[in-house]
Image (tube, rainbow, N blue to C red):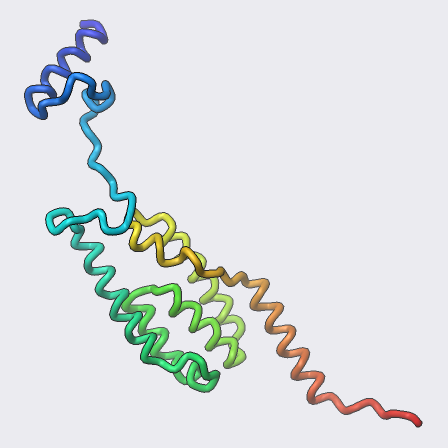
Length: 174
């Protein structure tokens, strides 16, 4: 059997089962049709909404609500909220919680932990950008990424300021 005969036979079999139009792609006829992937938010209806995505969005909303209730504008409140922020990351790895936790660790002088959280936030950003769901991909669209170098520079700046403040003043001569 030649390739043309095989393709015709295959198209005839598929046409009976799926009623393919005559201008259908040969690749669709040979390998079957691909399921349409969602390209934009809100393309789902009640029948096609994925259960996994619904669960992710429910947990994200729960974490977002808890984060909004916290006082993250105050350094002392951020430092005190470190255990709660860590708990929120276990519920859902929200990029804003990572950002807040980085700031809390730096306020507390725990720069190595801040570097670790920055690395975890970078990995989460990668997961978000490669998610099959546009709702998840949109999480990191307008967020800036912390690099370990930025944390080290901020550490040196803060420690340099602290050292300058504690150093004795140089004597002045008239």
